[in-house]
Length: 209
Image (cartoon, rainbow, N blue to C red; front, side, top):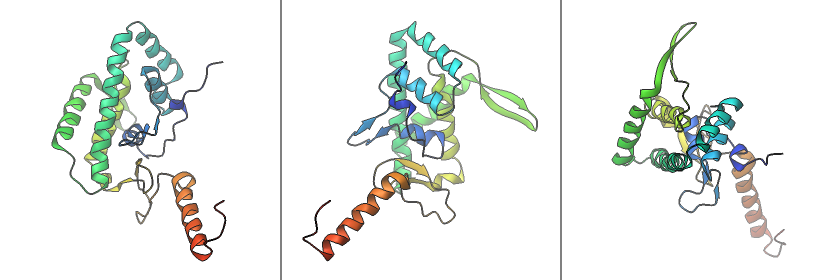
């Protein structure tokens, strides 16, 4: 039985594809946990995020096995893009203007990806979709599209960064009051820490556990 990789267990809490991709590293300044260790992880994460079917993922991995050097290059490119996307939206979440070189690179890479786009007719018109290619970097095209869509929409003002960790998310709450990437994770840990501090203030001799 094939062992489940961390990339397939990643918590998709960003609310939008590009932020979920940025969150595949926990701790960008001081790395704590990496979810993507190689090209296989990149493809498995893409399947986990709903970008690829099982058969499509297997096709891409088979293509990658035929050219491991190219796969390694694409993987490093993906990690570079992840960090660039993280910097752009982390700056915005903190009320800062993203670095111009990051914005320029996002724009240029997005333009390059659109060489593989096409219009597909739907019931009520057309949508932009991607060609059925075995290109190793195909998994990155929708991520780039997601980043540009968020950046150029009103939703960009809803991008926030967790008050405990560095994960990014889209705050879709009515009063924009969401503070944590997940209440079941960071939110509960902060609440427990507060209760502990209050208990120690009331009784300094109280046990620590």
